[in-house]
Length: 374
Ligand SMILES: Nc1ncnc2c1ncn2[C@@H]1O[C@H](COP(=O)(O)OP(=O)(O)OP(=O)(O)O)[C@@H](O)[C@H]1O
Ligand SMILES: [Mg+2]
Image (tube, rainbow, N blue to C red):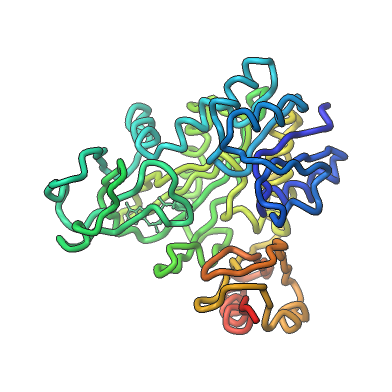
């Protein structure tokens, strides 16, 4: 078994990966430009450098047999070269290249009959008439994250304020629910899914506000989302962890919104709610170990702690004492010293027997736990 992994990125996903790597006695070494990143002080090794710079990634990767990412915006060129040198790069650079371009992602769904919202790709941005009937959604093909590259276009004046970058234009889906499924695959081809999670969004920030599992869906829908997730990862021939985001329409139709080839925000609850966390599963997948038991031990929900609007500077948490006094509540702070509006600063997981009771506790926590600044 390999006992050292090189990770591109040093954010909160890397931090939670480190927490699991310790249990497997695996060393995680991070490459990251920010000295103050969540992994900086706790990684086995921390190299300061740009993950988008080819030479920096090549130099860093030379020291490892297994390389992974905790963010998609990396030098894929360097990863191809490292793969060519015989290193295990998971997810594979080919998969990263496909996924990081939402246009290619959509084409992939179309070619492989994976259900998705109707779309078209645009590059010519000046003097265009709206390419679809209002309302629709415009997404930058590359570089968007946390809803930042997504615009809902309802009117001509929205369209006049569109993104000017190459984009995907897709139908606005009046979905009933947003669901997410995390699926893992190791080199031997073993595949396992976690139960679906249901996401509640904050429309202002375009961020998941909280998500819970099990989702309030029928057994048939649950089986169907898991089947689609397995189909996607197998078709990609990918090794690692893949989050598959879905829209569920009122007619029970499932559409894949997007995929992310790494641990995902919608899987944080697995740390406490499941026999195996998504982070442990990612390590098992990329080290070609048996995949862990994904069953839910107890229902739960996850609330992002994000920077309050109107505060920027050193982070201070209001209400933390009261939250820590609650039972079945787990606080994760990511170690980011400065807050900004809507920046993901941490999360809280709430366990319980009934989703209704869990939601009440989430609402309460949301009302008292605030990340502000001096
Ligand atoms: N076609 C659509 N119809 C309706 N809502 C949509 C559509 N596409 C995106 N959205 C809404 O915008 C959110 C963000 O879109 P998307 O997941 O594509 O972007 P992202 O920036 O990659 O997001 P994140 O990093 O938050 O997952 C979705 O979760 C959904 O709520
Ligand atoms: Mg998304």
